Amino acid sequence: MTDVGDTRPEPDKVGYRRSLFGIPGAPFHTSEPVPKIFHDALVAEFIRSGHRVVSEDADFLIAGTVSTFWLNLGVGFWEWDLVGTAAVELRVASPVANETVFTGQYHVDYEEKSAFAGVSVLEHVMNVTLERLVWKIGTDPDLIRALGAQRNRVVAPTGFEPVFQP
Image 1: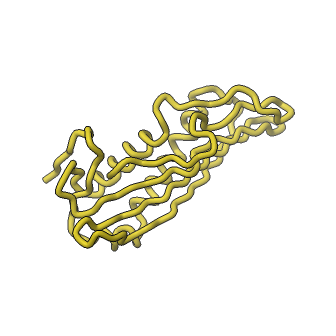
Image 2: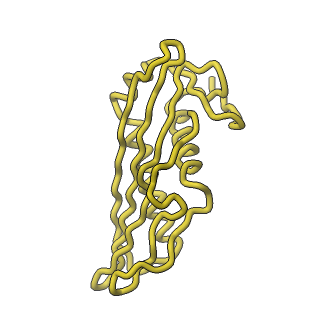
């Protein structure tokens, strides 16, 4: 997995707290940069799928670009409406053929209602959103076909500790 890019309009935020009248308030932030969060989640999914993540000599190079990672917080009559949205584009390239062999766009919305909109609820909504996006990627038949039935070596960025699985 090479580095994950970020084309979100506000890369330093993942949403805003809203007043009862819908006026944006304080922004929401993540504890780590969003591209790192996506990178780590995608690496974990490739490992879970049986691929080996290596720092060199890979069968495929996988790159991603995050276009959306956002939490919309709306006010209902009795509860908060929380909608997490995540979108990423993945590109799989063959270093041998020096060409892109697959490009996929992935998008997920996750909605939850809650009487409380504290930090733990906001984190939960965004974690579920990311989990569902990664699951969608991991079960995409076109991506599975592109990587082939065999367990391949996918490349990690420099500085990532390679994980080898039997």
